[in-house]
Amino acid sequence: MRYEHIIWDWNGTLFDDIELVVDVANLMLERRSLPTIDHERYREIFGFPVRGYYERIGFDLEREPFEVLAVEFIAEYQARWRDHELRADARPVADALHARGATQSVLSASEQELLNAMTSHFAIDERMTALVGIDDHHAASKLDHGLAHIEALPTSKDRVLLVGDTEHDFEVATAMGVACALIEDGHAPRERLEATGAATYGSLTALLADLG
Ligand SMILES: [Mg+2]
Image (cartoon, rainbow, N blue to C red):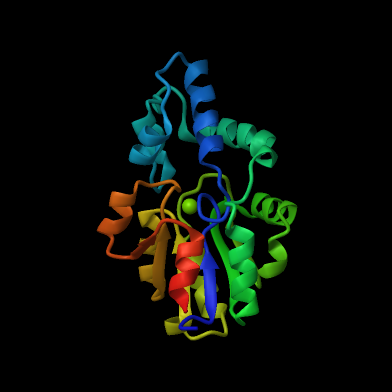
């Protein structure tokens, strides 16, 4: 294989949480009598840092600080994530990569303890040599942790592929000096993924087929 190590994004890439985040966003919007969103609108406005997304979705950050909204979001997310699943092909693809001798890790903007709990619940942690989350629930950027992760990896950068579902994953991969592949049906529309110039796939299975 061209790549010896795969770095996975978590939300929207391995974990199919689109319905979950849209449901939680709508719950919070309804509580404030604000217009709700659908999946398409969510993909249009979501982005990192998520503070900007909170503004675009319609919350008044002058009245309610982002940090307060973020606490409410994560409480609702924590209460519901077990009702959702990995992408159907996440486990088979992780197993296939393992069988081909590749090592794998997760680099996520999720808070570390939550990331540990989710990957353990879905028993995909056993395929990972590292689980790299961040220190709070504000999902600012995973870049700093990504840079530390790539320095610690025993694999040379040109043999590492980062797989994500947003243009932010492409920016992070570029800053880390590694290749990037993007998967659609996650947290961003396909047009924005393709606009990065990164190889874009309809599924993890399609990506696997292309890895050789
Ligand atoms: Mg993601």
